Image (cartoon, rainbow, N blue to C red):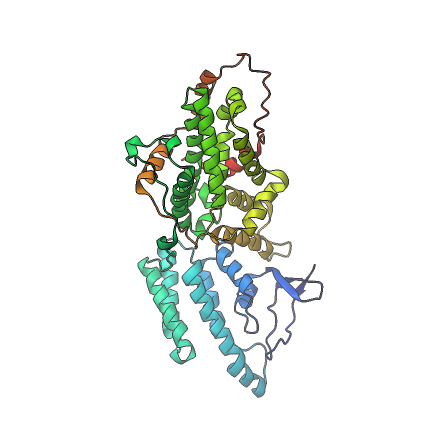
Length: 463
């Protein structure tokens, strides 16, 4: 794939309309532009509003990650300048007329649509004086646009700006159709104090866990995934942190349920039931719960229970093995990545792998090229990862919530404690050196450190 700095004007459908200066493109084998690789900020804004061709992928990437290389006020200024841009170079009367009648109106339409898209779907600014001033500047600009030029877009833009100034979020997540949802499988005794884990159907546990996490995942904001905000105390990412906390609670709950049982047979039943729940979560494409539950099953306090695992049924192990294979770390979690690529919403992906990828991209690629241009390839990778996480937010699960079960599960998860605290209990249940050191664990094969790196990616910094 070739690359080239374009520093000359080239006709592409309209007179005196060419590729912006100070921009580097990647080209495919036939010499056509495949993607923007790098450019100056002004050149990128020119490409964003190019009159001859709408590059939707570029625009989405730019608006997702613009905070890495500019501010809202600077971007507003550049876009308004672009709207009022003069003709390029020295034109004769015919060329000037063509510019005024054909090219400039298209640039203005592009600018207005980019502003509407930015304010409506990609606004990533926190409240503050600078944000307020940028919005007021935009409001003043939009109010001054001649109505005959783009009256509909102008009105829509002004409405969005007013909502942003008022702090009102216009975008709403679609609601599921309860009428088509399966009937809940309820235990005989639905009172919370009477509920027992083994007596609740595994399918319904998986459904309710999925509904709980789906609601949390739907609140995730794009800007929480920018600049590693989930690691920053001064700019927290509350929804990322909530999902991390939930993931860790679910993992700890799995370990606590198993280790709460003194009876060996009961422990194996709990493990079998948990495996069934994890399998239903997999069928629901709740990959986050699958990873979390397997993390609990493979935690050190549970994994060391050799006698317990030796009693787990072959059926349970046969169910568990493909789940382990799905989230294996082999080839950078290729099996899981392939499954996620094929998945159609509704789906809950494992957020930890997205966070791991974002950190790798941010830390492993420079922000500027050797030419001093914005390294847009880096930001394209960041944007692609963020949109990979975002694309599963819009389609909710068509499942019926059961408040009593959700309250039971929420209470259980919050009281599960820390997996590290369970080691002593594990050693009490199966002390070391009690004649089982040579027991073959042919019924269960753990994937070793597979989970460790995935869970570390999800860890939250201490406050």
